[in-house]
Length: 241
Image: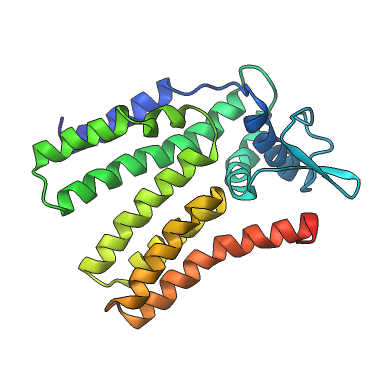
């Protein structure tokens, strides 16, 4: 398979391997926040269709999703135009949920796979071996299985691979854009799945301790802190902590 054929192949697989049904508390909690932001312009989920989820907290008279807010915020960006077109979130087989997974989780999965192939090529693999390794990574690991539903693990994993690719690009040629994108993706991953913040801290340490461009160091840190600052601000607004 040539590189030009890889992208259409991944898109086709993505279209066919989405489970467009909210099956459990985890997904319902995330979509409850997404729905509340878009439809009611509020962070509590009191009026959400998915209020019956068990993954919620009760704070000062209101229910809130107990999940990191960043994935639901990303979903809200996609859901907003479709909601205004009359495509609404609900239980059961749902087009809005399908589109959210497609444009967030699957789009990131495709980008993740392409980034992985770039990394293998950068590290010296031939075109044939790079494609072979990429197919194993894409379809014989949990990278693929997690991408069928809306969850923070798949989102964070894809963002980490993208961040790693831009980190290597910045080492190769110290463009400010690559530092910003690497830091931003590491920060988004951390804000989506908090334990992955260790990757942001680890690569920040590498960049600060090695001979990277001073402006690149500032750009990396600033871009990475931004999503975490949004996460912290929303947590503070909800719970005061």
